[in-house]
Length: 450
Image (cartoon, rainbow, N blue to C red; front, side, top):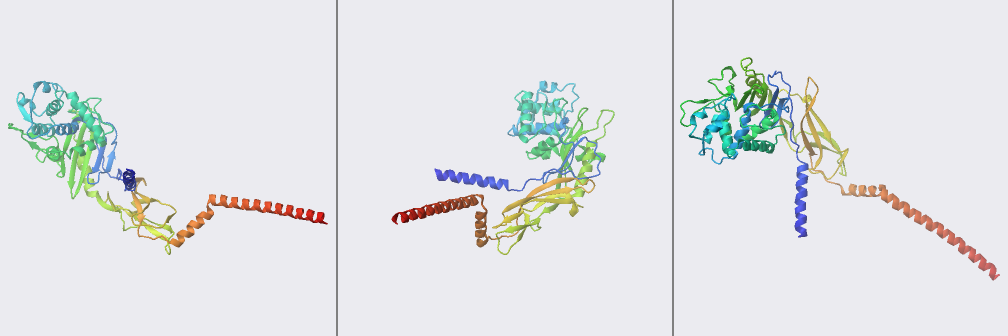
């Protein structure tokens, strides 16, 4: 039993060591560009590395409008076993709740008294942004209680890791207590892209529901070559638009080209019905995608073939120093025209290192920053562990000398040595005193004998 416990503890501590010596994950970097965005909150993320390359007010709370439906999709799909074959009865009472709300609709009302497949309702919700489809799905999954569905949305947001998000409805109609952030919305959309059919449905420009002779048309002009006009962007894919007077225009979308993929989250572009109806979200997204896809690229910023620094080595015969290299190769999305002076490396290593050293022995860490030419500001790229570039054996002779030297310099050794000297000194004094007494006794005895 004791042996088992020891083995378990050994495995546990080994795991702790592995986790604490691994490479630390990358951080957000706000690379400089000349784009003037119309949206008040922006987040642009390289999806290949999960690296934020540009952000503006990404953690400010904003109203999400119909981008809410991304979460509605998540909760619906994760709680309906068969989205292809499950059918839902369309109830007039559910659709009546949207009366006089100014909702965008997908003509689900044409199917009142009938049933629609879940897959058709998902298309109806995501393509033309049908609030009616969102309400029908929420009512079904919530067991006739839409508030129950909303509670599920909030629970899912918390599970995904959203820190500043709260939903009050499944469709995105304005509510003061219905908000998110660009960063949270990225987490939600990235999660949704892993779910069945989401990427396909959210990137659909035209769709026919079963039995309908009229199509559903996307509200996302970026992905619609027929109706998008000047806003159409050939590399864009999905995901969801949203618009209310309070939220302004909102958009979550992605773009891929030349092996790179990005997601843009844009909230609160100017909008006022009948007054200011430009699509700042589409122009911002296209501008950001063009910049990222043409000005950023993946480059190596830390390589085991490139030493970071040189450090003094102790206890190695004939070896005075060693080159330290990153424990692993690390590549990152950086500006394609980056110069050596834009990468700043700061190290944390001891003044000297004791042998023996293996090439996997972590002896310090290096922090790599991107420095902006114009401002001089440093932004964290990553931290990497540093290891020896070569295997170095420990000299037994030098180690013994070190041990002896350490012992002689030890505080306790000096105390013991002092104590020994004190005892010897006391013994010496006592011996002298005893010797003097003995001599006196012999003299007395001698005189008596006379």
